[in-house]
Length: 112
Length: 115
Image 1 (cartoon, one colour):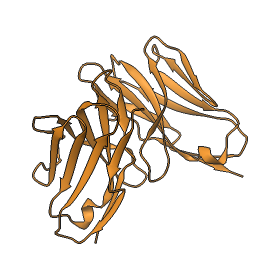
Image 2: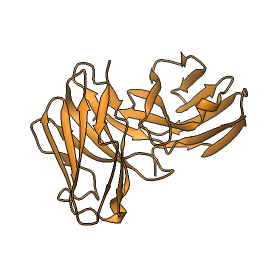
Image 3: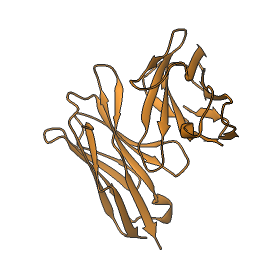
Image 4: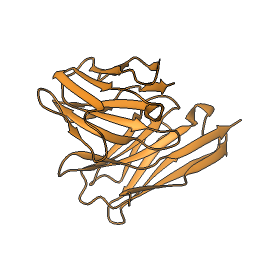
């Protein structure tokens, strides 16, 4: 069973709307949780990095939240743009071996 | 800073031939580099971890004799797909772990198509 579960699997929204992507994990303990944006045919690009003690981290229109008690994280995208169309991947790092556990990603499509 | 490059960005080869993919950390040293494979609409799957100057560690199910990894310097790791077959067609992504702070940076990926 994957230790990092993301939902929804895919999402379509209209340009200008907000959306929230979810990430649930079972990796414990963990050193940090990251959200990446991956454009089609490109490598992942880091959006936010949070340690277990952080609750929220923003990067422009992207805001990530973390609840270490419930082992949940969310990525909120505000005022979506067409260029936000991509896969968003949640990654949790295992401190024991520095392994990165990848979620399957949420494929976001922003339509005009 | 913290740029990772891959070369080539895409390659088409015939079945049975070998293909080498390079991963370079352009402005930092990386003792450890990782190779991932990604099939369409799926997440990244770790293939192997390479450490400079030592043998790579392969994930379960990844054939070490088919996917040769060399990490000869602190800025370069190579993945050679030997005797490629159509089922090896995939998107190969490397990442480099910065020695100074353990931060990990991804390359842009290499699209391999085996005909």
